[in-house]
Amino acid sequence: WAGSWAPSAIRCRKRKSRRYGKPLPGAGETAAMGQSRQTRGDFMTAKEALKKYFGYDQFRPGQAEVVQRIQAAQDVLAVMPTGAGKSVCYQIPALLFSGLTLVISPLISLMKDQVDTLQETGIPCAFLNSSLGEAEYRAVMRGAAYGQYKLLYVAPERLEAPGFAQMIQTLPV
Image (cartoon, rainbow, N blue to C red; front, side, top):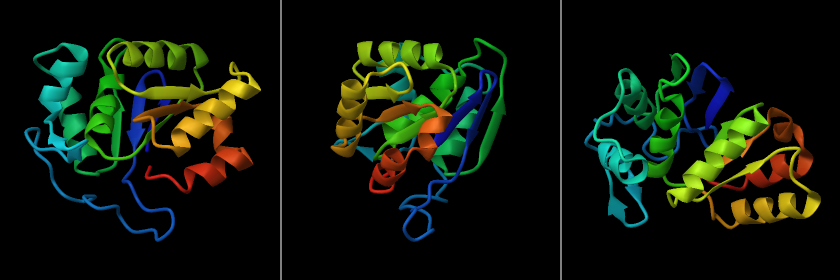
C-alpha cells in the first residue's frame, strides 16, 4: 500500500499477502527505472507512465529514487516540500503494479482534487471518505471489489470499518 500520512511525507511499505504474510510476486526484486511489472498486457516504464499520464519528460529531483524504491518493494519514507510532487511518487508505481493501491489520507479535499485530476487523465481511481452518501459509498466499494480502480484513496478511519476491512482483504492490494 501507499500512504500519504501528512502533506509533506510519503510512507510506503513492502507489499505482502495478507493471507500468507509472504511478499507478493515481484516483491523484493530490484527494478531499474527502465523496468516495470506487466500492466494490462503491455510493459510500461516509469518514465513512459510519467509522460503518458502526467505530461512530463523527466522526474523532479528526488522523485526517481522514491519511485525506484517503491518498484523494488522497499520501505520508503520520502520527506519533500510542498509542491515537490510527492503524489507522483506513489501514483506512478500504482499504475505499473498489478492490483489496487490504497492511498491513506486524512485530507478530504486533497483526495477529491487528486482523484478528479487522475480521472481526467484516464486513470481509474476513487475515494472513500465522509463526504460520500451511502449509495456513493456502496458504488465505490462495488467498483473496488470488481477491480475497476488502480488507486483508492481512503480516510484513516475507513481502515477500521468492518465492511471495508473485510472487502480489502479479498483484493490484490
